[in-house]
Image (cartoon, rainbow, N blue to C red; front, top):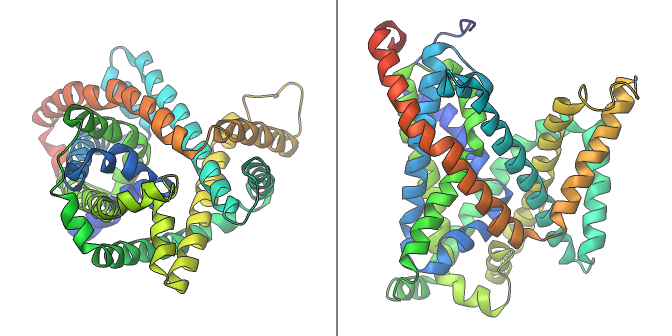
Length: 378
């Protein structure tokens, strides 16, 4: 365990910066489409305005324990943290590896499916759209990763501004429908609560990045980060659900459940807002694909074809094509099915291998470690 070269702090500004990492992970293409909000919350009724806060509260507690374990022991990779979590049975860390691989595959498949669905609005068949996205990804992963990383921060801001502008205008435009949604009975209460827990489970995809980001925090900073992240992510998801509660009957009638936010945006008839939203959403999908696929290529380029392909650049291209091909196959099942089934199963897996262990074993180990090492909280 190497000592961090950065002085650990507890300031609210630093906590906000680290919480923004979680926010950026959460508010990606799946969130921005509105598809997740409908499938996990809105379709069940008005609890959709409140259950997102519960889901993000559960995740905040999980991240708090994971970041506390990291910062108190100077561990900044999820492999180290989960080996510590499961010690002395350190091989159980592989359960996190499985979750991470599966959720990444699902996330990239969903991003490809989302981008392809956007292209279908221009009259391009879905299958052909997937192939076009695949060709774009091959070139960008090989030649354009640096450009994508540099542009992603700007486009994230654009998608957040356009999305929240649409949320508030859409709510105001359909205020009577929003109010009426709160008078309708809540349906399938048990399932809506289960979906809330499952949602927090697959959002554990944020755990690795938050563990890495915890390098600048002390324990007090971790607590503040968890609180701010809970407020930011819970509020954002709740607002998007309130919007879709009011628009849900229209979205269902128009058969636009795959990209409901795009339907709302286009229906509002604000030209520049619609253009900004579509462009930024498409880029969000592509950015997610490129950066995630590149990470997977780095992971496997020295493990696959090492004996048969000696040239690293050639091997990297081959691995990239293989990874992209697998993700394209996943995307063929469609965005709705990926979010409903792949994310759903990842949610159950996340509950078993991350949420429950971190809130029980992790919390117990953290309390014991801090009691034995009070200097680590300074």
